[in-house]
Length: 299
Image (cartoon, rainbow, N blue to C red; front, side):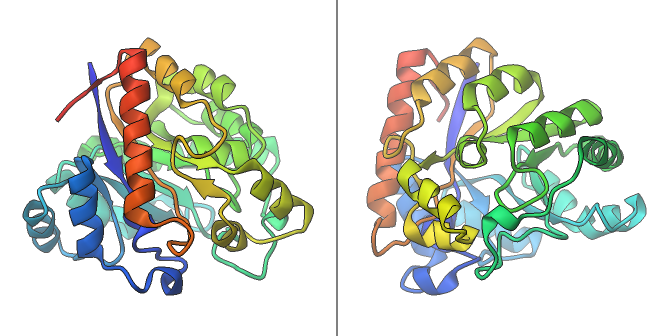
């Protein structure tokens, strides 16, 4: 069993805060990511949108597609409407051998609203989350039947943010609904990284290695700052530069025979955290902890 190491281009090309990364290009992101050693990249909005164009773009940069964000609207849409809304991405990701679609509910999230405190995110009761999970299962089963797993991304500012939210979603859904396990979002949301990993290891499809700076997170919470304020202030960082024990995470992944992608996703202000420098710190840290935990890294 082996893992692959990928990265989101968000450190170079931030789709939510384009002004802070205006000095960087997507071509630079892929070139530098590959130089560092990453073998995969998640899809960014400034990559070609058509399938053959995206294939040629990735091949030219000698890098694989290792997932990509999908803004879900399942709270509002029925199954048929949501299926039609995501069909093109599913078909594209199947054609390009992506390991999954990274799906998150965005119909009422506050993650992109810089004036709205992340503390004011929408919340659902346990019963409501479990009902939502049942609804998502139908869509996840359809995706699976197309050959494309759905990996649900719990995310700050959204209805699935806390450890309880993740637990309720997994409890209320069928095995077709997989999990994109994100260490940084879970800890920022007040969850226990290792407890959640141990509980839902059999449902994990995709892993984001994202670290946090706890003092920044505490300030964001205490002073009612937004998610985007948190990004600009440096709440997130790469593995090895924050407080999360990624050796313990890697050891748990080894114990559960995880053999998917480990993806660095660490949006920061590049004026404070140069993308190449920090992405290399993250890559080197992952190589170190994988080696120490016995996780083989595939080329």
